[in-house]
Structures are given as structure tokens and as C-alpha cells.
Length: 213
Image (cartoon, rainbow, N blue to C red; front, top):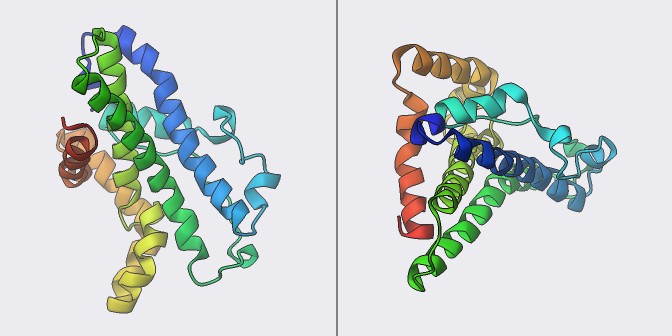
């Protein structure tokens, strides 16, 4: 999906690879940092409390973002038993990832509004970079909020769904990876992404809210 946004600007994509890496690493670092602040040092002991890409990136997950518009990094290990807040600790750790990407998108949106508001001249490459920065961070945040394991949304909304429909919550947790894989493969074969159709309206909404585009 993201490759299709810049079919004639491969040089821009090369420039934007660090943006993709930073968005993914900041997402995982935020999980590790909040877990550490809440009392669990598992990620810190395993070298995940860092922005070093080598500690976080998953090659396939990174490639999927470029191809289909969403993807993942290596999950941050968290021991719920170490968290001081046993009731909502995991929810807070899970929410830290999407929240961090929305924060980056908000910062990017502020830059766009300043540039446009003060009519600051920028070149085409900068325009592509900032749009990519906004898109990738919003896409990561929204995708990870889907309440299907192993995405962050399963930890954030799992207990809520469980109270309403325990059977559905169990199925989403147990079969989540299969569901996601099936949806991804379906999209790659047919050219129609169900996940993309779900998250695209939210991406457009946040692009408008944050940057007015």
C-alpha cells in the first residue's frame, strides 16, 4: 500500500526507511518503558528498553507495512506478575504503543500546520517524508488497536469484550494470529484488504484532525 503511494519516487522511499524504523522502534520502546515504570524490568533486562532498531525490528513485519500498509515489530516481553497494578497494568502497557504513534503523528501534524499556516516553502521530498511519517504512525496505532491477539487491542479491549461476550473474547485471543494471517493472505491474493478497509477511514480522520489533510 505504501509503495503504491510513491510509485515513481523510490529515492523518497529510501529516505523514509529510517522513518519506518523509528515509528516501529518507538512503539516497542514505549511498551518497554511503561512496563518498566510500572515495575516490570523484563524488557529492560532483555535489552528492549532502547530505540536501537536491532532490538525491535521484525523483517517480515516491516516489509508488510511497505506492501500492505500495516505490520509489526518483535513483541516486547512483559511479566504481568511484576506489574504493581495487577488490574489495569497490562492494559496500560499495551496502550502505550498505539499512544506513542499517535503522539508522533500529532507532532508531525503540528509541523504540517506550522508550515502551511506560515506558508513556509518546502521541497517535494520533505512533503513526502512528513506525509509518510503521519501515515505510518497513524496506521500503526489504528492497526494495533484491533482487538485481536497478538495485537495491543486484545489487551486493551479484551476484558471489555470478555464481560460482554466471553466466548467471542476467547476466540479472538486463541485464533487471533490465524485470523490476521488469513486476512493478510486474502488481501494479497485478491488485492482487497479487509483490514485496510477497516482502518483507512480512521487513518483519514486522524490525518485531517492532526494535519488538516
